[in-house]
Structure formats: C-alpha cells, structure tokens
Amino acid sequence: MAQDDRVLGMLKFGKSCHIEQFAHGLLYMNTLKHFVEEETSSLRRDSNEGTSHLWRGDGVTLSIRTAADGPFTPIGGLQGLSYRPDALQNVNVFCMYALRESASETLVDPRNFNFGDTFAILIEFDEFMKRLKAAVPGTGQELRYDLVEYIDETSYQGPMGIFKKVSTFSYQSEFRIALFPGTGAALPFDIGDLSDIVILGQLSELNNRLKVRKMHRGGESF
Image 1 (cartoon, rainbow, N blue to C red):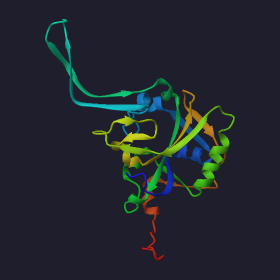
Image 2 (spheres, rainbow, N blue to C red):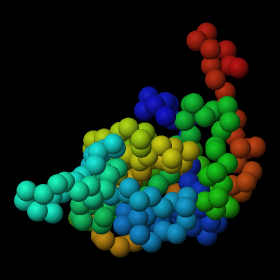
Image 3 (tube, rainbow, N blue to C red):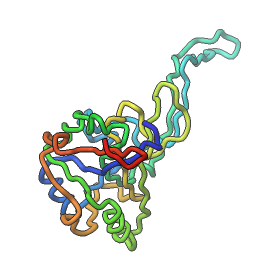
Image 4 (cartoon, one colour):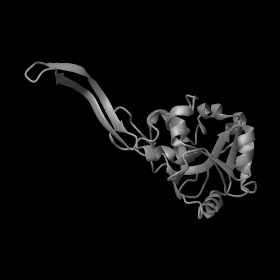
C-alpha cells in the first residue's frame, strides 16, 4: 500500500456499545503492550507491536566453541532480531480505518467486518482532528498521528515504531492516533461529543452504503 495512496474517508469499526461511546467523543485508547500480550483476537494481536527496530538475520548460523581451542558448534539459525523498548509499551493508541483510493473499487475489505457489528464514518475529519488536538493540552501527553506504513516482513530491516506494521495487516489500512509517553494502562480519552460529525450503521451493510465517484481531468464523473 503506497503512502501516496489518497485517503477517501475515515471510519471506525467495533461493537455497537463502543461505537456509541466513540460518537459521544470517548476514544478508548489501549497500550501497545495490550496488543502484544493481552489481545487474544488474531485480528488485533501483533507480536511486532512496540518494536523500535528490526534487524534481519536470515541465512546466518551462530556457532560457539565449547573450549578455547575446540571446534565450533552451531547453536541455531538467526531469523532476525528486534528491539522492543519498555517505554514504547506504555504508549496509548487509537486505531481507525482509512479508506484508500486503491481500494475504491472493492471498498472496505470484508475481513474488517470481524471487528464488530457497527461502523462510524467521520463526515468532518478536519473538525474531528481539531477537537482531538484541543483535548490534549494539560494532559501531560504528546499527540502523534499518522497512516500506518506496511512493510514486507520477509525483507525489511530498519526502524519500526508505532506507525509501521508488517504487510499481513495491510487490509486493516490503519490511521493511528497515539499519546506519548502514554499512561501504561487503557485510557478513555474524552474529546467532546462527535455525534454531529459521524454517521453510524450496521458494519455488515457498509459496502452497500458506500459509493465512490471518480472525476476525469475534464471534470466528468465515472
């Protein structure tokens, strides 16, 4: 998924009770540690969450001498190394779905329908961000946000962080909101009522309720 792939809309999926809370401005922000250790759903659990750097060691075998002048004995192959700093585990994150232009023909990947039974779509994303930013001062937290970049887990090595994930999860097309340094525990973060800028509906009906109109350079739609 290219980072220059335009975003056409921003949505949130979940159980009806949680989406209702979101519509009233409550962002339930779990820690990265939660997604590594506590989240049992295969949709959300990611063992690479909170990793700051990934080094690849494919095809390398580590050997050791049991005596100073003895032969080398293999002790295993190195598939790769990753570093997960403790501080990063405390960061609180809130995840949304960014509908990208490349997905406009098929719309939302149906695998996302397993996240719950209800959707919320923001009809005024700029206003949402304005309210979010206004709620941060005085909390002792720093707001960061970005689209998630999905990397090839078989070849990538380098910096990771909270805005990179392996391509296995690319169908989730995440936009992430994060608070640094975080609280180390789940955080219900209130940014004020959003009911005037969201539309709710049944998640299973979402793709039947969406339509994308593309414009030719001449201004005609198709």
